[in-house]
Structure formats: C-alpha cells, structure tokens
Length: 166
View 1 (cartoon, one colour):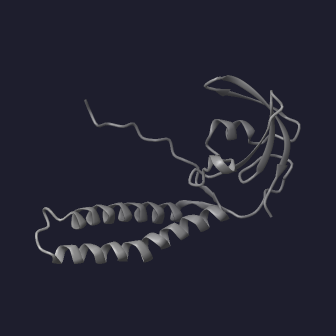
View 2 (cartoon, rainbow, N blue to C red):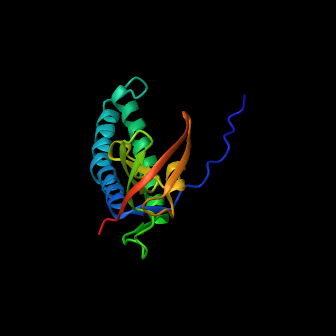
C-alpha cells in the first residue's frame, strides 16, 4: 500500500472582500492571540521538568504545529488570491460573487452565492465557483433553464434572479 495521492485540481484563485476579511481575521487571531498563549503554556510546562510524560507540553507542542501549519497556509493563500471587489460590467449574467435565486422542479426556491473555495458555507448558501452547480450557472441569464447532474439523477433549475453586492 503506497502513500501516493494524486495532486488536487487547482482551485479558483478568487475571493470576495468579505472572505478576505475573514481569512485575515483568522490569521491575526492565530498569530497574535492564540500562538503567544500556547507558547507561554508550553514554556511553563517545559519548566516543570520531565517532558516525556507532561501532557500540557505534548499537547501544547502539537497545537503549536497546527497553528503554524494554518498560518503558513493562510499567508500563502492570501498572497495568491485575487480579491473581487466590484460587480461585473454585465450584471444580467451570472459571474463570481453573484447571488442567484433558482427554482427547482418541485417549485422550491433556492438562493446561492458563487464564492471562492475558501468561503464555502452551505448554511448560508455559499457555493464554490469550482462546484458543478456553479459551473453550470456561470454566464447564464435570468429565465435560463439549467440542467445539473447530481448523485440522485439529473435535476432541472430555472434562474429567477441575479443580484450583486454593491
């Protein structure tokens, strides 16, 4: 059995202003608040003596590694993303950042927002621009019919509205 994992497909390099703000807040929280606290607790635990059986020391070091890994990821990701702060010129079509209202075959209305992969939040209806649903929606206009292949079979949707945040 090998440990080989095929490389992941590159994700979209776009993010909304709100998403960038949230990632920067997380980075600040980890780097300026949590890391100093954990570093302090680890140094106190190390001062107690035997580190091999000191749970505070072992778990503190583990938490420091987790924080450092996430900080590295966030720093790198924030450097490479493009912040989309304006609505597109043609607001009659669906593009990145759009709020889209869809009606399914049963007449149920769904509202989604197309966002970057770092901002996905199913509870709020935020779907990744890389998802099959978003790919099917891109470039469509109001009153368009969209067909999407789901695990439960093919589903039809009707575009009711398209809105952009100002």
